[in-house]
Amino acid sequence: MASEAVRGFVLASGSPRRLALLKQIGLVPLHLAPSTTDETPMSDEQPGRLAIRLAEAKARDALRIHFGQVILGADTVVACGRRPLGKPPDSDTARAFLSLLSGRRHTVYGGVCALDQSGKPHHRLVSTVVSFKRLSGHELEAYVMSGEWVDKAGGYAIQGRAATFVRRINGSYSNVVGLPLYETASLLANLGVWAET
Image (cartoon, rainbow, N blue to C red):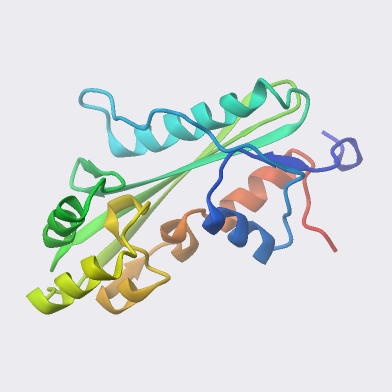
C-alpha cells in the first residue's frame, strides 16, 4: 500500500497512556474511537490469544464508523502463569493482584491489531516478562491507597509508583505501559502510516 494513499489512522482506544505513547514517536491519530468491547476472557482462553482477540474486537468496533481508514486496536493482558489479571474493579481485588505478583515473575501480553483500508486485520503479539520484588505490607497498602491501580491491567502502572517494585524486565517496556511501540510503528508503516516529521 503506498504511503501517500493513507493520510492517518484511527486509534480505537480512549486510553491516555496509548495516545501519549503514540504521540511520543510522532504517530498522532486523526480520530479516537474508544471501544465498549467486553473484556471478559473466554473459558480456558490463553492470555496471549485474549490480548489479540480484544485488540481486533476494539478495532472492529471503530470500523463501523471509520470504514476505509487504517484503524489501530490494542489490548494489554497481565498474566500470572496462565491466569489473566484484568483491571481490578475494587481495592480488594487490586490488593489480591499485587499480593499474587509480589516476589514473582509475570508476563505482560500486548496485542495489537491494525485494520487496513479494506478491513483486513494485521496482528502483532508482544510478551514482556516482569519480575517484582517481594512487597512489604506497608508498600502494598500504600500503593492500594494511592489509587494508581484504577483502570490498570494487573492492578499497577509501571510508569508510576510501581516502578519501584520492578526488579527486572525482559522485553518491551512500552508494552507494559500499554503499547509496544516498535511493533506498532512497524505495523502501521507497512500500511502506509508514518510518523509526522
